[in-house]
Amino acid sequence: MSTMKIRLVVGFCLFLFAGWYLLSASGCTTNINNSGDIILNSGSTTASTISSTTTLLPPGTTTTTTTIAAEPTTTTTTTSTTTTLPSPSTTSTTTTNAAGTTTTTTMTTTTLAGATTTSTTSSTTTTTTTTTLPGVTTTSAGATTTVAEIITTTTHAVVTTTTVATTTTSTTTPTTTLTTTTLAGGLNINPPAGSRVKLIFIHHSCGENWLEDTGAGFDWAGGLGAALEDNNYFVSDTYYDWGPDSIGSSTDTTDWPTWFDLGNETYFDAVCAESGQNSTYYNFERHASNPGGENQIIMFKSCYPNSEVEGSIDDEQAIYNSLLPFFSAHPEKLFVFITPPGKTHVLSYVNTRTLCNWLVASDGWLSGYTASDGSFNVAVFDFYCVLSETTSHHTIEGASIIHEYAGGYDGTSPYHDDETEDAKHPNGDGNTKATTEFIPLLNYFYHRWQDSK
View 1: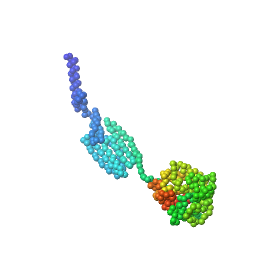
View 2: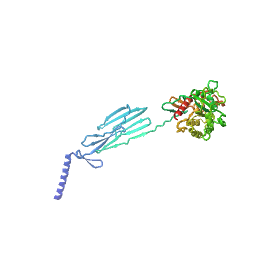
View 3: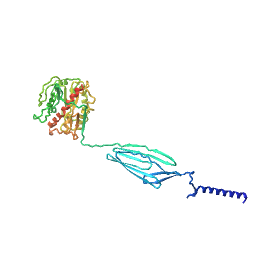
View 4: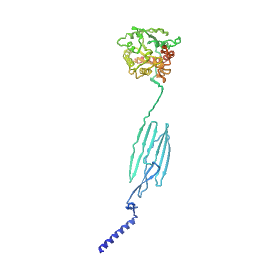
């Protein structure tokens, strides 16, 4: 071996020795892994290495701890959103594992209106609070904080509110239809003051029975005539064969446009001038004197066959609507329509009730109507409703107008004594009930008309 080669070998050995000496002095060690790779380990703070350790906690809970060489152990901070409800019950549990990681679990239970709300918060990266109220579910998610390689990322989860519509199913058999109209300042149901107010009633047999005096041995009497007189009205009527062309015989729904015709007011003029009692076997005795002048109030009613409404109510609605221009042109009169009473059994009772409701309702027949002078000179009394069931009513109670069909309404009236032909006429109990409920309404209708002129 030449001198030059010897010098190279010696120099290389000295180089290896110097390197080994320096590494030993700094405390480094070398390891060989299973793959044969040389791994250099160092305790020097100038070669910092970050290690991330995941510690397993109870199922559903994960805590991430970041350790920096030569630095104290850092534990992540979890931000949670807490929903506070009245008087909650809260339980907190704190545990510390071997690595020094602290886990706090908080459970809050709130009971409100029969529902139980449970909220659980732990040291996991996400805390969710769920509050359940009747018909509404609200979910609020907390913040998630992740720390890795000395980089902190904060992600704010979206707060989601879900409203669950509440569906209420109510089954009531039978159904009660109730309309209550309350007017501010109360209702004036006092009789008209001063001179008697002249009233005429266009009717047939059911109207006659309703007018009859009670206590005179007539089973169907309703005492309406006497009650009207007691309330300062002077009562006249029309009946079969009355008036020009015996118009009194024609009182079906389809006949009213003939009575109230702007192109021919012959019949109307006769109605206004009439002051007599015209029923065939009248048993209503008038005691008051005729105050003179024309009738101010025109009451009109069809008889019981007209309570049957076949098909739809469209035809009837068209007829009643056709009368309004005539009524508007005569604001000096108060027109009171009496719905036709029912037979013992009304086959079209659903349609009949629908029609009567439309006639009475504030958003029905008279919605938006006033006479030419702005007065309210048209009114409706639901005679059919009152006679349909014992708990059906159309009257005034306190400051309210009550229009109510009973829950048991089925088209069969309790105010008929039997199934005979005569039983198609309401009996005395029904007619008396109708008198009691009608008089306060009539007085109110009168004052409303007068006050709106």
